[in-house]
Image (cartoon, one colour):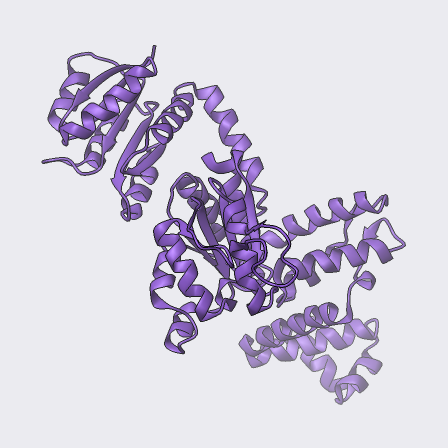
Length: 448
């Protein structure tokens, strides 16, 4: 059976972790600090996995992680950190830890993380798992901003900490929330989404917490709310900034106590779920305006993720455009082999105020309407073409402004000659000078 080294200076925790792993059949060794742990490796002992606390007397768990990675880069290391110190876990993951646990550590969570992390001991299997995880994300892009989000998803997916995803409408906030759930240990349970801006305020509490039979006219039976449906899974609060202050208080209590009251109920209902929330509002400004509770903000914003607008990641537009083209060409059973170069240039020039959602809509429309085997500029809305033309003109003007006067004069003469098929009489008329003056300048600029 696999050998596991646990490094923890609190002996009660050390005994508890050791007992849980031994009962599962693992061969467990223990150490209470950096020196004792490193001496086991120096003496020739080998381990399949190391579980270490971040805070150790003397040299830290991060020091131990770095030391072990130098000795054995393939050794999987799990770090433990106190709840609320997620930044330490993020630092450890970037240093090479394969996973992390927040204290107090629950037995089921410990075993799940250990078994998953041991797969990294097998390089080929570990690569396959990494590929599968990337595929599950469903997030398209190669820009630095998107790569940072993908790294964050991998790091925080198994945390119990709440996540607040911010950004403009149409940037894929729900896609990120689903990705976090789909690669987490909660994936076996439900991902339940609720749009806080689409439900009237007086119905929102019922939607979130459910109701008891007879609680109001028409409530003939008990109905579960979204919080109860998401038990052990993930509750996604889309556009949480639209929630009323009265309901914010009840949500805060639910987050703190893991319990709530159904509408018309007399007893508390227990439910444990991870909260992921999103908003396109500036919640700190909402707090200053008295429209959002500061204590709720800090409960939700434990792990912040900022989604970039499409105009901030224009290098991703070709990838997204090709993805949507294949999607809608398939749905509409049309053979479209690609996107015209001029069309793609127009896409990149446009600022996309509606972000990815708008790009998807434009491509779906083009696929349906086009009569060609490529998406041509004529298939695009006028405003996108105008934006491309305007940007091209602005670039041309900016280039001209940087040119010196002789270069401008040469460019004007050359342009007139080419426009008139090098007929000097017509070119001089176009420029408003005599033919003799034109020839003098052509000699000057080596155009004869």
